[in-house]
Image (tube, rainbow, N blue to C red):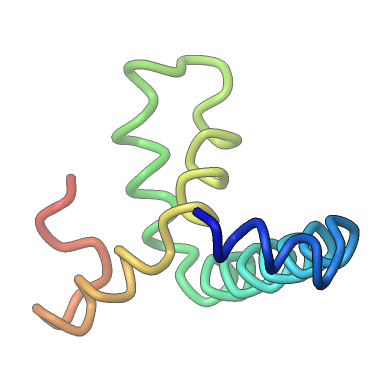
Amino acid sequence: MERVQQTLFKWGINTVVEVALWITLFYIIVGVIYTVFHIELMGELRSALSGEFTIFADIAALAAMVAFWPVLWLTSLACGAAGCGLF
């Protein structure tokens, strides 16, 4: 905890927030690119979520794809199909 405080005082809170925002932006951009290349998986996810989110299933599927792209990518490496075993 002391190291975190020293880093914040050394860099300044503005720099730490800026770095966090840049990392978040990169994460979201990679998630959107992953979603563009896996549209069929988004359709499957939308149909799986249509029971819980009747009106906003498309938006929920898009948000889930962008947020959980590392999990979907790792499952595609593990078993050869993106999202296998998740639905």
